Length: 349
Ligand SMILES: Nc1ncnc2c1ncn2[C@@H]1O[C@H](COP(=O)(O)OP(=O)(O)O)[C@@H](O)[C@H]1O
Ligand SMILES: [Mg+2]
Image 1 (cartoon, protein in one colour):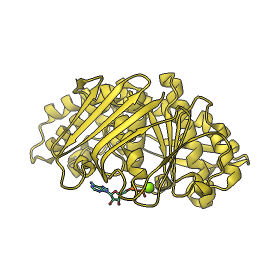
Image 2 (cartoon, protein in one colour):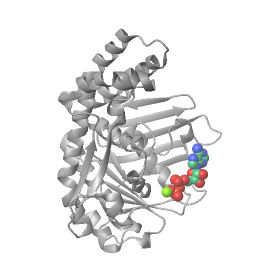
Image 3 (cartoon, helix red, strand yellow):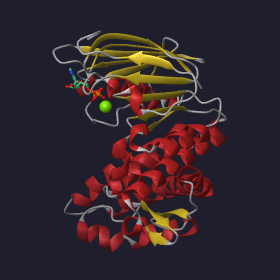
Image 4 (tube, protein in one colour):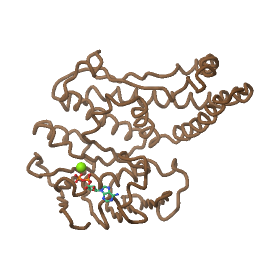
């Protein structure tokens, strides 16, 4: 998968910006605040249909402007995202796409960023978000089941808030939820199994030292037990007035050589586990879409020492398009050819 050009207007700090990318290695250089992250973020908006930095799309619109626009030309399609204060419109090849599930993951990019490290200490809901977005990008049945489940869950919670809970209706909700919960658990299991297949060898390659890395899926129930567990939650649901059972409480955690990563790994090791996790994610996307995602490295390389930088770039599949940002090209240890994209303060803004 290749990004050929990116054109943004009234997006974050940019009035207008046009960038042509090299099919292989691109390095965006600029001082802090010049808009490096904003450029990568706009690519993620096309990949995920939303930003990872805000839940409010209006934040993406340049101050005092009415709408932002992103136009991205890949080797396959022309993507357009138009964001105004109230809503956003998604287009592929000039065709308006009304379903998120049809747009998400059509362009697939994987972003590495320093704040990824928060994953280990974040709330379960933030960790689930990552799971949901990445699985949604490769599995239509997952995103469809998840959207339906979330809608039912909202209605079920509303019902449980009432003084007199309508038992018949509650049963209808639960019955409709069962097949959706099974799909959600099954796809999450598949995701975590695939990551576990690759994360340990990736970690050894990146760090240069072997360690056994494993993600443990803390799921609400085994698949054959879902009906029973849902029925068994009846009293608790009525007591707490919300749905106490379901995949909306799922979580996962990391083990290093059998120990909880949070309790034994150094900051440097955690960083490498995360990079290994992202590399395993690239594998998961490749296996499921038969395409290599575009890799975005935001301020990541300069945090690693020169040997690790080189190892990281060498592990990527050779056909991968990579876009790196950094404040100073001299911080990087890059031997191959690259396209340099320089951002200047007040320029193009
Ligand atoms: N909606 C917006 N309108 C105008 N400027 C914005 C908006 N959102 C963010 N910015 C500005 O974008 C600038 C660049 O951000 P960023 O891409 O994070 O820089 P870099 O990654 O190069 O350090 C910041 O100075 C910020 O104030
Ligand atoms: Mg930045």
